[in-house]
Image 1: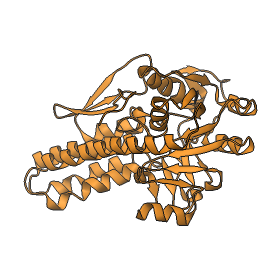
Image 2 (image 1 turned 90 degrees about the horizontal axis):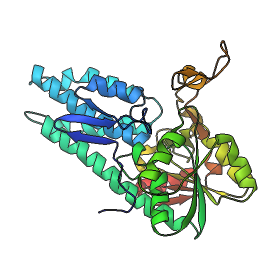
Image 3 (image 1 turned 135 degrees about the vertical axis):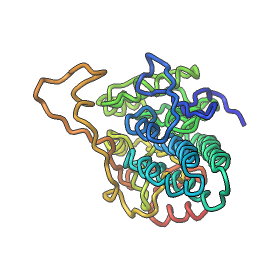
Image 4 (image 1 turned 90 degrees about the vertical axis):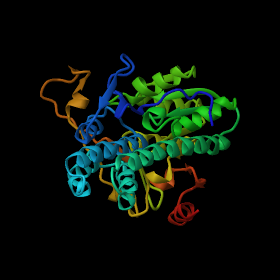
Amino acid sequence: MTHQYDTVRPVNWQNGQLHLLDQRKLPQEQTVMKLENASNVAQAIKDMVVRGAPAIGITAAYGVVLAAKAAYAIAPDSWQTVIESDLQQLAQARPTAVNLVWALEQMKACFAKITGNPVPVLLEEAKRIQQEDIEANYRMGDLGAALLPSSCRVLTHCNAGALATGGYGTALGVIRSAYAAGKITQIYADETRPWLQGARLTAWELLQDNMPVTLLADSVAATLMLQKRVDWVIVGSDRITANGDVANKIGTYSLAVLARQHGIKFMVVAPTSTVDMNLTEGSQIVIEERAMEEVLTIGGQPIAASGAEAWNPAFDVTPAALVDAIVTEKCVVEQPTLERMAAMMKN
């Protein structure tokens, strides 16, 4: 199944190695990092070589393959015990994205049925996780695009595109599908401080597929809305709780508040692997806090007065009450509630 505007793949398995497009270096350089052990995979996740909840999960799944290969080589009879420390390291690489632990659980579920060399079985499972993610993104793209009116102008935040997933993207998947259907006339992308995922990644990705994009400083969104120049805000998510509260890149909550104030619709696009039914609401989500340097510098160059401190939460939580629609590969949940989320997950 092929879609228009679908050329970017951040995670690839080639010649027994995991190949990651180094997202820290985009758009200036397209560098591929080749990894051969689980420890390096965990470090790459931590260091934001790869980011975006689904892409982190897929990367971790391939990390398990590399861990199993190494463990089987040194202890063919007890590789499942030897692999434990690698699994722990992978699980702890980033705390907020639920897909990471979800993917590790999927991989571990295969262990019981393996006899002999675990690599072929686990590699097949990792590839299945990646392919299912891409197909889920195609479905979400079509479901989300159906919600948009014609001549729609959209605003997205951070990067919830092919770079954040197995391919095609969640929020950008909807934008891709709607653009291909001729429904979208304007795409705005927030820069997304402090990592500038919008400026560096979303803009790059859309231009790779010959889609027009207009970049905004994060603080411009309110004025854009006041001038009635945007119809829908479309974002991804790293974790959604049972009641429909949404953790996503810092700045998402601001957009949701602004959208509600200006009568603009707010859509969250994420696979069901992002939904954590074990957490009842958003205050229970562990919010990752990252280094001050990410705010005080850009590309290693200081931009703040020396001696200033910075607070750098990587995510915020948008209450379900501010969300008009959560789009998963199963269906669309409008005005999400505990009951509606539970019904969607049982679907």
